Length: 165
Image (cartoon, rainbow, N blue to C red; front, side):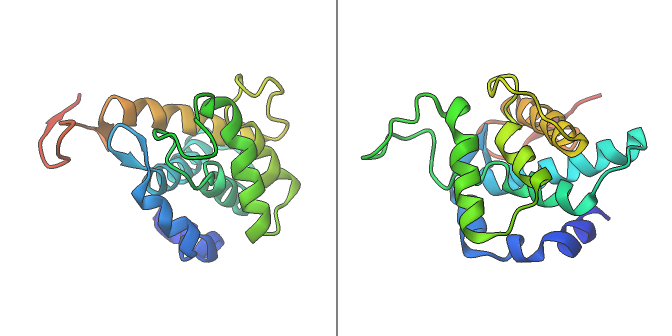
């Protein structure tokens, strides 16, 4: 169901080489950045639907998919940056990268720039950004605890799991 919405509003992002490349970067636990961004987009749609919120679906989906578009492995030090303050600075990097490839709306910019609130001090200014910020926090927690789709996974393999009530 939500896959169709993602495809409708963001097929260009999902098929881009840079977005596809994020599958090699781990975000939280054993979850790739690509999987994380897709999870956040789906969770954002679920939050919208469950709470009956009215918002711009296109901006919600595109902003969610691009919120972590920083395009590097934040766990590793590269020759330019140490990534020690990744939580504070990656929204700016993600926004710069997204602007290079896509024409962003004000809502999409707000989503990407402020999804790490309260680390990003200035809070989100639109409903879509609040939804994505909430979805991101939830998905990050579940991924860090190795809980995906109602299952707690072993740190080594996704195949072993214990059902969570």
